[in-house]
Length: 413
Ligand SMILES: *[C@@H]1O[C@H](CO)[C@@H](O)[C@H](O)[C@H]1NC(C)=O
Ligand SMILES: *[C@@H]1O[C@H](CO)[C@@H](O)[C@H](O)[C@H]1NC(C)=O
Ligand SMILES: *[C@@H]1O[C@H](CO)[C@@H](O)[C@H](O)[C@H]1NC(C)=O
Ligand SMILES: *[C@@H]1O[C@H](CO)[C@@H](O)[C@H](O)[C@H]1NC(C)=O
Ligand SMILES: *[C@@H]1O[C@H](CO)[C@@H](O)[C@H](O)[C@H]1NC(C)=O
Ligand SMILES: *[C@@H]1O[C@H](CO)[C@@H](O)[C@H](O)[C@H]1NC(C)=O
Ligand SMILES: *[C@@H]1O[C@H](CO)[C@@H](O)[C@H](O)[C@H]1NC(C)=O
Ligand SMILES: *[C@@H]1O[C@H](CO)[C@@H](O)[C@H](O)[C@H]1NC(C)=O
Ligand SMILES: *[C@@H]1O[C@H](CO)[C@@H](O)[C@H](O)[C@H]1NC(C)=O
Ligand SMILES: *[C@@H]1O[C@H](CO)[C@@H](O)[C@H](O)[C@H]1NC(C)=O
Ligand SMILES: *[C@@H]1O[C@H](CO)[C@@H](O)[C@H](O)[C@H]1NC(C)=O
Image 1 (tube, rainbow, N blue to C red):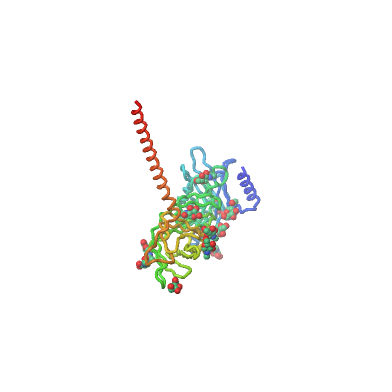
Image 2: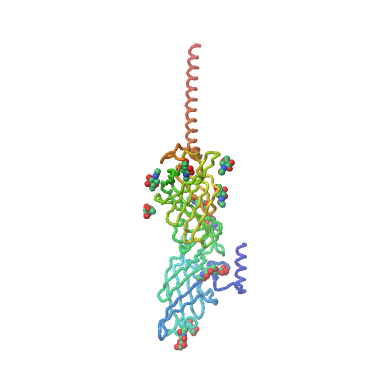
């Protein structure tokens, strides 16, 4: 009800001229709206003048409006819906929508233009109306609004139609744009995002396919006093970014096993630098002399972001970490996946890690200190084993007692 009111207010505003009427179009069947659309269109039309071939480039003018006599919400068996926008002297853009059980599509686009309209086609040698048509693959899930901010170029012979800033929906369910949206592939960029629909709200996270686990890489850092760091681990950088249409998205990048590395051995800090393409991870280990522990204190990550992100790249660090902690002289080991939270934009997932920093006895790992997660995982089989042993014991005791009782029985007779 509220949304119907706000659309009504919007329409009133359009009629009163507060908004550019050319950018919003509506097809309705008496009281029910079936198509809503808001987009920019640029036309490039090649035509002949006496002397030369000429290109006329123009956008939808402000007098463009829905032609109700040609537009339709579909009637009876005819389920296709049609939006026809007319402008100038008999120029028009016609979109025909069809649907199946899950999608609606702009199956066909027709542009009619009147070469006698001197506003758009000055000095044209030919006169009268021409028509170009093209099938399109513009489609969206039913009950979602189709959005596409980037340009979609549709070549139709002598005419090129460029659609941009598109917000449209056909087969409307309740007189207004749906909450969920289908974002066009042009806006989504080259990185694969599993589902095509995302929520319309700005704070939602569009889910991505869980990526495969990274390969385990082997790293070492050597200083004047020998090796000060040994590590083997699989690394995955998880970055969260804002897309151009204001949704939040995350992407997980696996570092390959052949990631190049270097580092430093200082008395108080051991540094490991990893670089793979535009992605870099810097680990700084510190040690606490009072507790005889070393740990990952600071982590710095930077990477390029996908094309769909508003920013080209990102950098984040956190110097108050206390991860991968173990006793000096021993190695930290964790088979379970660990996640290191760097900032709200980045986290690092670590798989099958074994690491040792500072004091090393030669070029090999020292005694292992297992992480809490692994110890917890080992606790389960121990508990199950203990429970089984207990059960066997109870059965045995019961059997022995039973045997004794029956013996006792014979003796009394
Ligand atoms: C149509 O879109 C334009 C820009 O994308 C926006 O400024 C305008 O307010 C929209 N109009 C309506 C009626 O939604
Ligand atoms: C084309 O435009 C001319 C000039 O505005 C107009 O007189 C004519 O009726 C239009 N042609 C058609 C077929 O509508
Ligand atoms: C149309 O032709 C007239 C006369 O030939 C010329 O002056 C004018 O510049 C032409 N207009 C365009 C847009 O080509
Ligand atoms: C699309 O909308 C954005 C923001 O309103 C604007 O900056 C941009 O120029 C528009 N693009 C076109 C082609 O109209
Ligand atoms: C939006 O999509 C989600 C997930 O597909 C669905 O659960 C929800 O009902 C949809 N919302 C509306 C208003 O259709
Ligand atoms: C990546 O980070 C986001 C936001 O913190 C989270 O929702 C998502 O589950 C993470 N994905 C992976 C694979 O760690
Ligand atoms: C790492 O391996 C990939 C393929 O596995 C290869 O394309 C790339 O060049 C290698 N990088 C380095 C630095 O060796
Ligand atoms: C190397 O060992 C020497 C002698 O034990 C020590 O003074 C120096 O600080 C050590 N250097 C590093 C980087 O650990
Ligand atoms: C060392 O550990 C102790 C005990 O956990 C803590 O109070 C102290 O702040 C730590 N020192 C450093 C330099 O981290
Ligand atoms: C740094 O990491 C700590 C521990 O995980 C966390 O509490 C803190 O919020 C992080 N700092 C920032 C700026 O995210
Ligand atoms: C350190 O890494 C280099 C390069 O991968 C390798 O040749 C060397 O054997 C490694 N050293 C140790 C102690 O693992």
